[in-house]
Length: 165
Image (cartoon, rainbow, N blue to C red; front, side):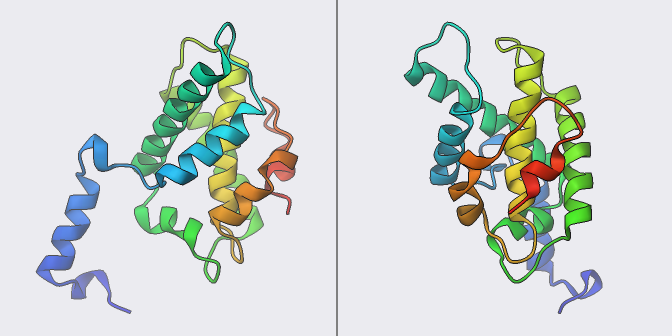
C-alpha cells in the first residue's frame, strides 16, 4: 500500500482534483442510486401539496444536497466504502457517524419547503443508508433493497433501527 509520502505527482494531482472538484463533480452516488434512494425516501416522507412526480424530483434534489454534504464532510476514501463488501466500519462507528452527520446536515442544509422534522427524517434516512453500506460485508445496492423495512423518526435514539440488517 502506498503511503501519502510515496504518492506520485499524478496521484497527488488526482487527490487535489477530487478535493477541489466543482459542484457538478462532487457527487459520489450514481444516478441509479440517487433515483433508487429517492424512491425509497418517498415512501418515508410526504412533501405537502406536491404531486408524486414533483415530490420525486424534490427528493432527488434533497439527496443530491446530502450527497454533496457528505462529499464535503467525509473523506472520499471513506465514502468509497459503500461499494466495498470486504472493507468497512464497525457498528459502533456507524451509529456515531449517523448521529453526528445527521445533526451536522440539519444545521448546514436548510430545505425551507418541508417541515423541520421531515427534513431531519430525510437526512437521517439517506445518511443512515449510506453509512450502513459503509459497514463491512455490505454494499449500497444490497442496503437499498432492504430500505423499505427501515423505520426512521426524527429522534436521535433510533439509529440502531436504521443500521440493523
